[in-house]
Picture: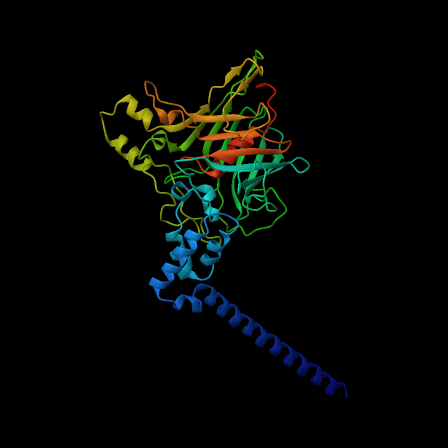
Length: 400
């Protein structure tokens, strides 16, 4: 009887293990079929001419959020639809619209300011960037980016992410950070991706993730400095807004001129273990300019300044006698006086002037207790503009 029970138990175990193996094989087959279906579904069999015409009409008809999500939906149908939609959808520089997540890393429109706003949550020291959908100063906008403040002994970090609940530096939602010095007067903006060919990544002593989310170490993440922000010390206590300067390292100063080009990222790298692709992420003439300068022997000093990094500075305010305050024309986008309010314009090289140096590239101002407007344009991106605005939230006793 004992032998019979043992044989029965063993046979049941063999049958159970066999059933589990068959089920696992079926799941693998189903997963492969689903993966193949996502890559090439039945919709991919549409004639290319008809498909392109349909997608062009959808893209042109859905010109703003939230209806613009239909354009993103079309890009997720299959590989063929995605490739065609990526060709049809223009960059923010041309279209003035933010469509795919990569749009937040691309320069804004050339002809006008792209209107956004920032909401601050004091309890968690979190900041949310939204795209304005209406002319209202505080509407229910389209979420773009989130940042959270992390205090350290000698500095302060703002981790910037594509997801409001995922603030881990090792996540594939991480796109960059802002780091300040001890006094909060100097800041460095780090991009998670190289801003141009040949960019050098800053080494970090710590590999600790800032968050509770565990992610695969195969996800590429780096620290490439793309901007240096400095606030002028106000030791004499003179009245007036803060004075700041931003050096945009990868953006040439010639980018604000007619025909000028700023580095433009085309896509995020895959998070499936692949490293950065060998093809360049960015299309820029700056690298060509640098090669020309290195080989040329007779370049003038003004030309070298023109091809240097773009430098942004405060637009000078005027003192209003009746209001007894410093004033800037924010075109109705700012309603509350605050030391945080600012407008940034390009600094002209020595001996040069022009209307391009009067255009506001970034403006930031207060409209409520925890609501601020942020408007930006070419050649900076939403990510860079957001990082610059985050630097204004830090307390700066030496600059007030």
